[in-house]
Structure formats: C-alpha cells, structure tokens
Image 1 (spheres, rainbow, N blue to C red):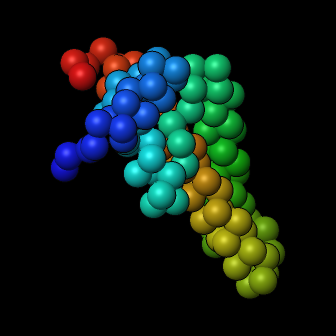
Image 2: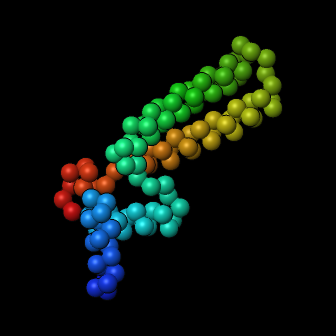
Image 3: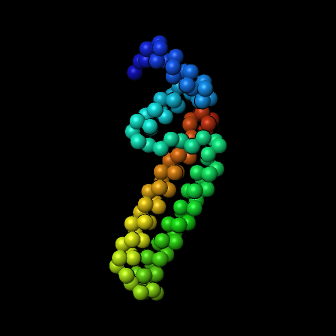
Length: 113
C-alpha cells in the first residue's frame, strides 16, 4: 500500500505527536475502524490491568456459585444458574477485551519499527 505525500505527512505528524511509529498509527486506525478497543496508554495501563484482575476474580466467584449449585451444596435454581452463566460469559468477554488493550505497541515492547 502506498500513501500520498500528504497522507504520509499526516501519519508522521500523528506518530510524532503520540510518540509512536507510523505503523502504530495505522494499527490504531485499523483497530478503531474494525471495532477493537484501543491499546491502553502507559497512564491507563495500571488501571486496565487492575480491572482485568478484578474481573478474573469475579469470574472465579461465578464459577464457584454455579459449581455449588451443580454439586447440590445449595438449592438448584434454573433461572439463577442461567443468570450466573450469562453474567459470567459477559465478565469473561470484558476481561478478554481489557487484556487486548494491554498488548501495547511494538515500539513500547522494544521491537524495531
């Protein structure tokens, strides 16, 4: 793919402003266009990692609740089980999306541009 001189100048200006490579700018644009979450900045990364861990713990609690019902340690309730499974699935999905935000750019990981 080739960019016009004007397009490339715009990409370079964005990259310089953001402190990333032109390739990273293009990656971010592709991620945004395809509906993926952005990669977390250094400032947000600790909060995203903390949320990811909290969601992991919530998911474990949901699994324990469903297991307790399946093993008969608490009265079985089909509606409750369905609700727990649905919420557990959402928690796992959100956690995976947050994990994807922690990937970082190649430059931030030390790779050559």
